[in-house]
Amino acid sequence: MGQLHKRLCVLTPEVLKGLLRGIEKESLRVKPDGTLADTPHPAGLGSPLTHPGITTDFSESQLELITGVHAGVDACLEELTEIHQVVYRHIGDEVLWCASMPCGLPGDDAIPIARYGSSNVGRAKTVYRRGLSHRYGRRMQTISGIHYNFSLPEAAWPILQRVDGRSGPARAYQNDAYFALIRNFRRHSWLLLYLFGASPAVCASFVAGRTHRLRELSAGTLYLPASTSLRMGRLGYQSDAQAALAVSYNSLESYAHSLYSALTKPYPQYAAIGIRDGDDYRQLAVTLLQIENEFYGTIRPKRVIRPGERPLHALGERGVEYVEVRCMDLDPFCPIGITAATIRFLDVFLLHCLLSDSAADTVEEIAALSRDRHRVAERGRDPDIRLTRQGEEITLAEWGGQLLREYEPIAAALDNAHRGRAYRDALSAAEAALRNPAATPSARILREMEQTGDNSHLHFTLAQSMRHRDHLLESPLPAEANARYARMAGESLVAQRQIEAADTVPFEVYRQRYLSQDLLAGVQLRSGT
Image 1 (spheres, helix red, strand yellow):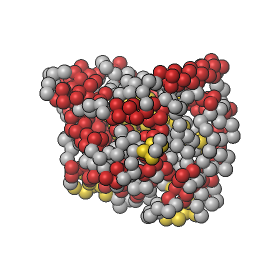
Image 2: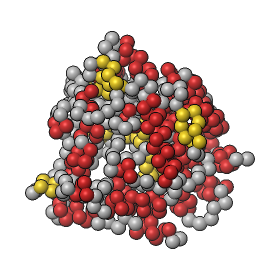
Image 3: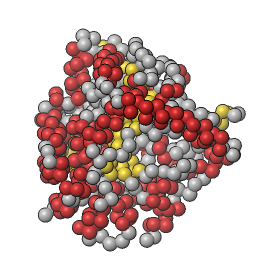
Image 4: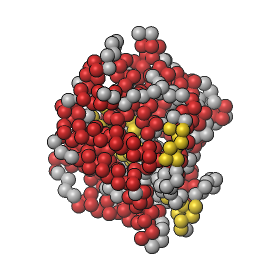
């Protein structure tokens, strides 16, 4: 019996039904003509600093909608739908842009950076974003996506540790298991770009003044014919400075040490920007990464942090709590950006990553994985595309077919736990898309853009966004839910004022204290156990 099947067999239906997930969904607010909204975050939605479900990402015009943690797929999507309904009741004639690649953008300096009030923590969030704008430009930061947070229930870990014959601290085993998942995820995430990539075209305003290899599809719209996710390609979340970072995911220790220099040593190009210009702060730090979140990865190890705590410190002190998948495009055919079938495929995919053997990564493999991701992002539907697996070339279709066959027992086990066949149906849809690239979302988008008559990314996405708005506004929102979100908005505004009133030190003192946390203390302590 292989390792995957050995581990899968000990996971009871109760454990499998207890998989936990949450969603963070980014969306730009746009005007009725498809250009970026320039209005402030609506007061009726509360404080973006303290509201638990409705905040902003990089831009004041970029909402981030956050669900709680759910054991049920349907419950998770119901909450996400509810949040959308609430938002639409507070944004007037604006719409939520349903695509990952942005709408018609103004000049870089006219894209508003998110604001979080006058507290030290609120100012730090804005200054961090100002640093991103100096380093990468504001347009890149307006790209939006779905982040899928995934974890196993606590009951799963002693079962898996026992079947693996691992002694030692439970937390160390759990850390190792999550990093094994991450290594396999990075090896196979190209499959998610192929199956769910939904950004084959962009508005020309996104690349104005930049060198690119895109082709003109129509006036104002650029694309690559076989692309799946330009968001995850060279035009997306990319940084030449970060390209030299070969972050190792072999353990929490190697991960922390890989990031440590980038978080603590000055980087000449960013040192030239400076920390401040008089009383105006330009960035939080002059290091390669201002803070951990600046590192662009397709997946992150995560832990809920305490107020004022840095993510790496939290991981070192208390271990990995869940993983955050960051490579999923918004689905422009779904009013809330992600479907139940996609979630179920992600559950199968992530369980496969966790339960399968996971060899240590190497610098050479990390470079090869980056090349494969860009290949699939930019020409994943090309029938001649080949990828690199363990140093040898293999076709995308052959490798994908092998992976999907390995997923079958996992989907069957999940269906058995839930007494249905929704997981196998999600797998069947993926198999159909692998056989027929025309069935992928990226291909469907290009077909439907053509059917609009002008091949316009802006016109297609705006029309889809309007349809989603109408659907969400027409769907009933229970009075109890409406009252609950009104109460949450009010409470968040009170909480922001309390934070502002409680500040006792100047911002510069706060900034230095935050950055001076010992990022490796917990890691070093545990590495010796």
